[in-house]
Amino acid sequence: MKAVIKKEILYNLQRAEDILRVREPKDFEELKKLSDHAIEDVALHKDVDLITMTVLIYSFYKIIQAITPKEAQMIVRELQFSQQALQQDNYGRYNKSIRTLYEQVKKCHARVKEHLQDVMHAARIKKGTTLLQRGLSIGQAAGLMGLSNWDLQSYAAHTTAFEPHTEAILAKIRMGMALKLFGVGKV
Image (cartoon, rainbow, N blue to C red; front, side, top):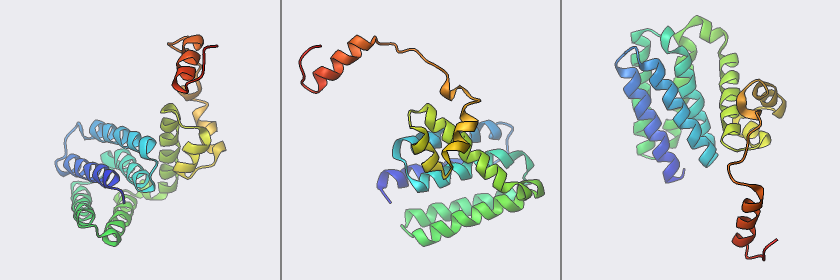
């Protein structure tokens, strides 16, 4: 695992632990912000481990209001284990810990357990749409999130991801900058 990826994952794990350790009304919004931060990392690095972490954090965001304090403490403990394993470069233990966290998400609430696949699929689609908004193509975003192009496109069509936009810089100026960049003469 690259050092920069490891650093981002450790940050996300620590932040999620901090949010879930002490239950506060602002936890819901804090997890949303963390989830948005994590998706920016995915768009930048396009790493499978970051995708897994992003979906996990988004799942926490979706179930936070339904989990009991005892369940939250179990999740916090497993977040600590996963951080320790990653810091020690024990990737086997880290991956096992992440699987355990996903299992705990399933166990936290009966309704979530019944619809976990829907929640995970929805999380992937939502985060895939965010990747589109960050400039990735549908194929890239769908591939990174483990979706079909059709799944992502059908959802993104109902969002602002495909809305027309205007360029702030005229095409003639952009073309001149590109030609200058590549050392080609003027148009």
